[in-house]
Length: 264
Image 1 (cartoon, rainbow, N blue to C red):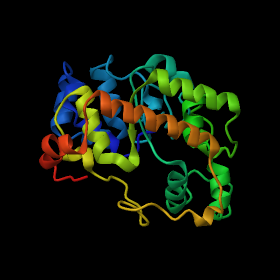
Image 2: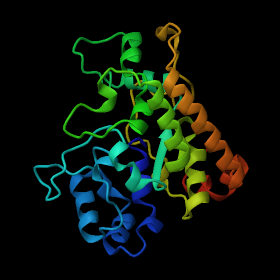
Image 3: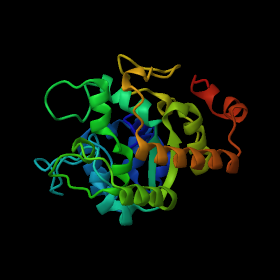
């Protein structure tokens, strides 16, 4: 799961579309193709080797069964399992501190909660726990409920599998609460220049915490154990890449953020 805000960044990443005329034109348009289902279908038709995993991307990029010759239904926060072997080494993901991600989802209409009655924040947390872990480890079944909506916490072996896939199959690890630094790292690692689209908050919440963390007191001490293991590993990978590619606040201030109006 990258978050809606990462889609325009990828769409505007011209280097991703080298050799694909349609993709280069889309990149020049700021990646707006990624905001429609038809956009991805066109990419797959014109540049079949560019993307081969419609259900492993996101709702906006999925292809609906009703309109697509690919016959793929819309997928929403699905498990990676069936597409992992195809996409291993080419997967990008943004990770967020688990309790902060849970509270953000709670304020977003109790995102992925399907039990009916409006939950308390603690009830929601207990239901939604392990979402990041399950997306990395569980089977993708586009026809059934998303893995984050089943209310079943990840098992120990699923957490272990998620950690393995995080270390072996994820090409880029970003941290949501270090978004600007993550976008700077993305370009340091893969090339291309920073663009304003990299820093667009596509889906800001009414309780957004752009500069401060959510108050976790309503969780009454609840900790998402599985996702905290994943997040700790993701943070380590992120810090290792920052060091490996020489990405610092000072470098990003000089080379990236002034071009976009962003700041640390």
